[in-house]
Amino acid sequence: MMHFLRTAPVLAALAATVSSAPSGAGPIPGNLSFYTPSWPDWDQYVTRWSAYEAPTFSLAFLPNSEEELSQGIAYLARRKMTYLAKGGGHGYSTTLGVDQDVVQVNMENFRNVTVHPDNTVTVGGGARMLDVVTALYNAGREVTVGSYPCVGATGAMLGGGLGRLQGLHGLMIDSLEHARIALWNGTIIEASEKVNSDLFWGLRGAGHNFGVVTESTYRTYPGQDNRHYYADMVFTSDSLEGVLNVYKGLIEEGLDAAASLALSYLYDAQSMSPLINMNVVYAHNEQNGRALSANFASTTGNATHPITRVSLDESYITFAEVPTRGSSDIICQRGHNQDIHPVTAREFFDIGAMVDLYASFGSFVREHPAANGSVLLFEAANPQTVDAVPDAATAFPLRGRYILSSVMSMTWDGDDETEAINAWATAARDTLAKPEVSGSDRLYIYMNYANGDESLSARYGYDKWRHERLTGLKQRYDPHGFFNAYHAIPLKMSGWN
Image (cartoon, rainbow, N blue to C red; front, side, top):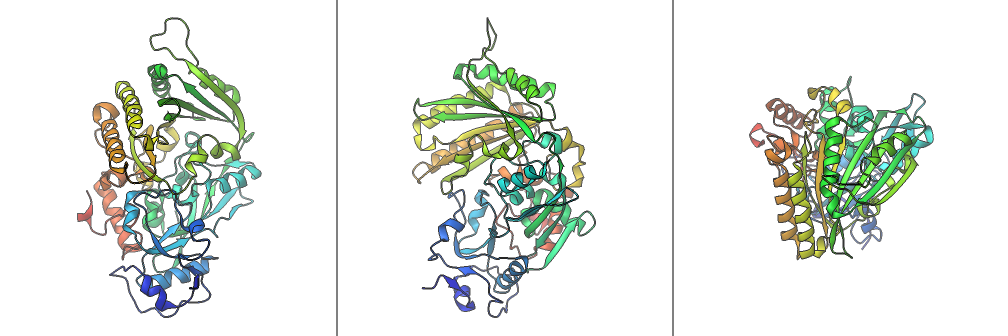
């Protein structure tokens, strides 16, 4: 059997159907590259980060240019064939599982990153975070970037784009100037504050719903010395209350804009016990970074909540290294089951609940060792730059509503432990979401961390005007629901919950 196909009958036989899309396509136009699962490189291109509730593919389409992408998407739409675009492949929402035996539109050939003379940067739709930071570092510039090198930059941006430098530069979407998008029928359009401004609003926080972004252009910021303080610390388990109280105090006092903190509950398979890790990043100032880390130093005397810091690994790294440190090797492994349950909060979670969660995590993984690669992560940065953008300016719904972002990131292989792992993570999420624990009257979550079992309002905001505006955009730009796999915005107002 040939791996490379150009005949419409074979493609049509393998296709899933979008019932309301127009039909009547002819042969595949041009010389487009479609591949079947017998292609020797199939797994290399098609495998995603998470195997849990994942989409499956009967064909892969690898366009080499925007023109080919346009032609291929137009062809698929005419043939009523469901397709799903892949950049970095880290989208793990369980909603993606609705796409079975569909066509993967693989954006691997769109990894271009170009820094322009006016200091803007254009990022191809398939570029990874590492591609972006490398190009910007070489140009002496920076933007907010995510924490891991293999994550697709465009997919992360479309949900908002949290990152280590958001205290300084806001979210990734706050630096976006314009984008080029292939709509459901292959039409290529631009979106900015001046052109298709309604779509530009929706791209920034709900952008997975409207098309395939071929490239996006951002303003950038001076890299100054282009270096960042970076520290990892590990503590004894009996230090937990001390670490939590210090973390809470720093948030309440107000973190410096250049700082970000990430507390992790990990698990040590050798000692069969949980671990406490704190990561500190401080932009452009090693001295201030060291001073921030010193807050978590081992205590002496009769401290009310003592801290014993087992290790401290400090360095002053380049901007290009920011997303390559820490647990990136684990994060970038593909093909494991990954299931994430998030909660955001405007204040630090109740410390008693955080202590109980640590104990519960340790007990659970001891009973279910298949989950020993799981991580509970609690990230914080100064919210002032993010909140300075008006709430109604973008589709991102969390401005003024969060300061701490948490995820229960569960990792395992096989099916035997799936039910127990999901039940524990869901219960942990629900506990943190209680008003007396989170300080929030409702569940608010960050779109890119959403599991898919939450209400649409928890993901997109509770305001009716948001629902009306998003549904209006969906009706205009994706009327047949080709982009429904990732937290689908309903085409009718009755679909909101």
